[in-house]
Image (tube, rainbow, N blue to C red; front, side, top):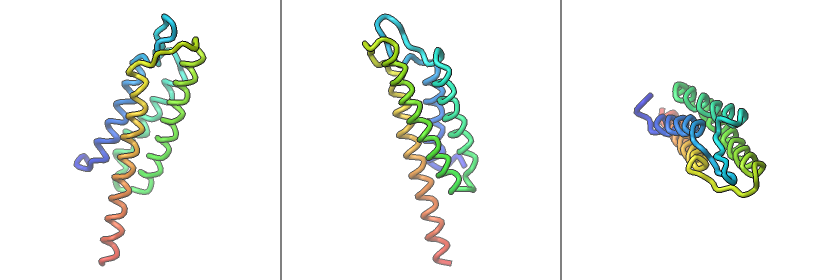
Length: 131
């Protein structure tokens, strides 16, 4: 359902992860570290984007949505850890670029989406009690 705010959050998280693939995340010495050069980062970023986009269409199964948000959060944390690892392994003199902030913003949007789904679940449970 497009009118739910968590749909927007999940879409933004997916778009940020897709944008992370095409943006530089660090400068190491004179080398620009692109995500496209690291297969693991591309795979993790693509996985988060697919999970988030697929999660949008599971609005009838809120418990599965919450679980998939948690899985996406774990994958984003692995993506952040992988980015830090590759940046530090390159040269040691790293300057983060704007692309390094994209997974962090994706994490924030995933958490907001998960909280929105949990609020919906809580509302449905309270309505069931009234019946």
